[in-house]
Length: 364
Image (cartoon, rainbow, N blue to C red; front, side, top):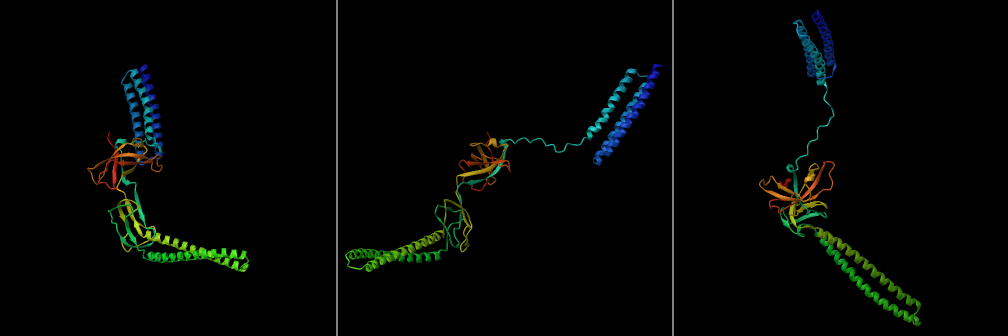
């Protein structure tokens, strides 16, 4: 009698749970259909709901079969309890998988590069480099330095046509000399007039000459002094013009401002140049420096005095040592890097300014 009551109770429980689980699964399928997911994800969620429904129905069927087979009340109760606990978990599992991925979550920070393996590229430079510019307009009459030629400070590199300036200088110099001669002549006249005035003053005091005669001598002296001043001023102006012409003539000679090598030549004979045009580029051959930048993540590994190993694709077997002599005190906010300058130690004669070098820290 008690067994029949237990079987009846389990059947009622089975029917009730089956209806509840079927309703829950149907609700999940409808909810999934309304969600904004891609078609392939929506199909996955629908299949998951159908699988959950089939699992629940199968579980309760096994419970009923066990009870009709006169299984023990304890095992039937255990099956029912496990099925009831498994059902919510099965229903929750699809919802957990439906959760959309987080948007805007930053990716984990990338670990800083190993400074010992960090490499970069930098050019070879020298401190003493000079662009030789045209200081005046003119035509090139002669080029006396070729590309790659070694030159010394003050050496003439090219000449501009200065014939008109030379002629103007000669004419102005002659005129200035004439003015200076006039100054000397009038200065001599002035001295004579000064003596005449002293004699006239003495004679006037003795009542030998009249006041008018004495004033006439005085006016003549003043006129002489004025002429001396006029010719001196003209001579001074002429000398200023001579200096200007001399500068033009000097600027017609293009000279090297320093010793070094002609790295670039931009003129040819008979070419017309304008003031400010680049004519030559003179670069010293040493000391050689390499200039490069490193990100702030590894800048602590590049202090003053650190050793570097340099290589170049031009000479793959050549390895050159360098020592850091300057590290920029500020980080460039645009690139997040700092500038570093290193001095090459006993540079190879194969290396030239402007070459690109691969830079890395010396292996310790």
